[in-house]
Length: 336
Image (tube, rainbow, N blue to C red; front, side, top):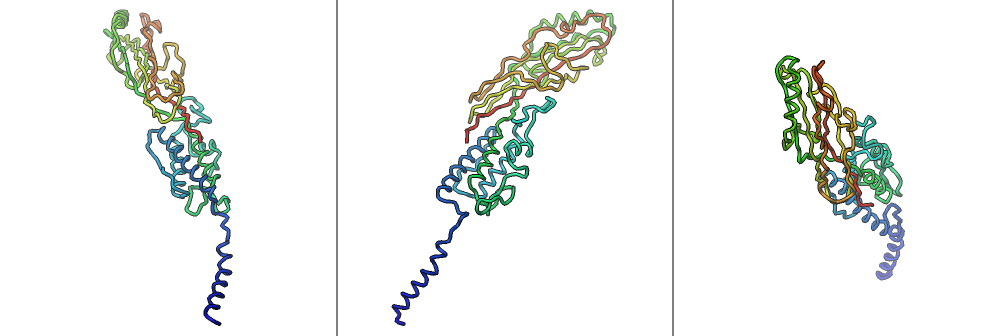
């Protein structure tokens, strides 16, 4: 065979053998349109998870998203699982069944709220078929269903809790104790009522209390005297809120008993039982950074006058209650 004919035959043979291999289909390989969609979904998911982190004053970010990468996808999933228990349960919350605390998501309750499987995120293999549950792995195939589960995860996170600062406080604490004899009860009570007319002190005497009202009447065991003691505190709650998205806010207070008193009582007719969380203020949806309440506990009456303290006393009586305050933020995150 002449060399020219040999090479022509060899070229023809190679072409015939190679064509079937080159024409092989790859059903698990995304189309160009699907890859464009994944870029859009991946970038949007990154922004959405970052917003949830910023709401907790964390500066986390996995952006920019440069393609369909298992490490990026697994990072989004892992961060969501870390953020979830820091969010208030917006399905069964915001309070526990007993109303004495805030209800946070658990990993289980968050997955249920998001419509995820109890075992976690679904993983997808070739042909888009489910291959198990857990964080994404390098051999997984990432298409719309996988991103939809991530989207369901971050959409379930919308309520956060933030601590408050106490500002513009005022307080009174009137001792009014004298002698050791019950006959001196009237003197102690008179001293208390005279001193109660004094102006308020600036600041906060009872540390974390934006509102306090309490009294002791009878034998003051601390000073071994007849006691006619009364006190008040009032002020405002303030919170500095992240401003990347608007949110509304509800200010909650937990009703607590003064540790120096015998029993819990709200003397000003305010609602609440000991340990109960109650809403004391609210703010409409806005992107303003500072949320400052009106004055809380702006009452003037002497607690001893509220209980009708009179001599002679029959037994020692001590009661009171106070509020702290915390902000429940309901976020209007970017819709994705």
